[in-house]
Amino acid sequence: MPKVKILFFIILFGFSASIAPANSAVAPKTGSICVKKGESRVIKGVKFICTKSGNQLKWKSSQPKTKTPKPNPGGKQPAQPILPITFDNLDQNRTSVEAKRKVNELFLKTTSVESTAIYYVGPNVREDILIEEKRLLQIGERFFYQYFKPKKFHVLLFSEKDVDWLEANQEPKFRNRSSLKQSIQDAPAWCNWAAATRHDNGELLFYMCLQTTGRGIADKQTSIHEYFHLLQFEYNGLEKMPCWILEGTATFFGVALGIGPADPTGVSADKFLRDLAYNYNPQSVKEIKYPNSTMRDALLAENGPISVMKELEFPTASSTKNCAAWGAYTAGWLATEVLVAVAGVETFMDFLKLTETETTWKIAFEKTYNMSVDTFYQKLSPYLRSRLAN
Ligand SMILES: [Zn+2]
Image 1 (cartoon, rainbow, N blue to C red):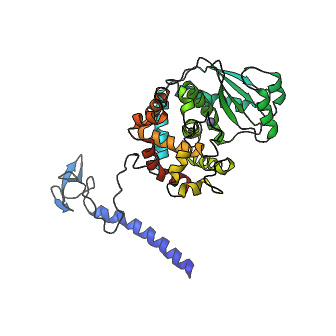
Image 2: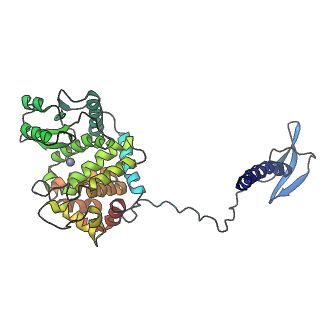
Image 3: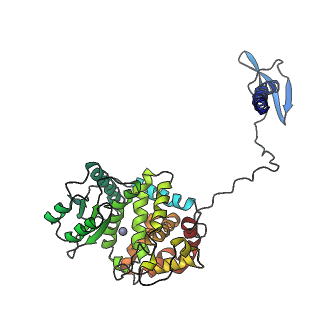
């Protein structure tokens, strides 16, 4: 008998829908036809008068309709007002959206700029990959133009098949080619790494290994990430910056500008974030703070997020610690995301600029955000857990 029951319900729904218009035709409503001129009726507190309209008689309400709130017994609660993102209200879902929105908003105010990159491209770099990387770099140059206008900078691009070319071509001179060659030969199937550097003469360079098998959506952050490192070099505070700022900010901007437009739902960025969290491996270095643990365990420990952030305060330049193994790319990314979501890109860039002149980056932070770094870590803690330890 179940088939009959299903059929019955379908008919019932069809039936109740079809009788509704018939009922409403009887009750007067504005514009519906009436018979006797001057006749009036009151429906739900609204008076209708049968009035001549053209050569027809139509119901017309004698008073404007006012909406009265419908009773809602046992129904849904009215929607909560959407609270702005603040350091005390770091909504798990909306903070990243808001940060991305602020980046987009600023990007839309910019205009295209002429690239000042000088390219050195290996013969086996795929043409389509080269075009895409140039497009991405232009986004970075345009976005940061008001903060960073290098007269020129060098971009060295090669594939895993370009070892001989790297050896034969030594321009620009300030990069040790044998170390690049060695990196390719160590892992020829893993040619998607990059780094930025500055020569003694002040000239800037970044290089990328572009695997010929192709690149994924997460790789769309790399060019902008490396370009942001060049900006950091120019802001002489680089040596003073902690690991989380150095790598976290470069990753945040690379993701927002490079991956963001190709990732409207944020799913790819979130996957990339979680993939990066696998790099968390502090036990691989001397100081064993979280033996045999993952980033998730570290964050869930009491005051864990604060410890993770404090561990990332070592300056990159003077340290033998590995930024990636201590979670700089993930925790630092989310910390930057929060700063941008709450106070915007311009304020964040002001803070970076201030690190140049202040004695320490912590003083620059406090002056910019009216909050100590430690207080920031506390307010950041639930957000780090919600994004990385769920
Ligand atoms: Zn980096």
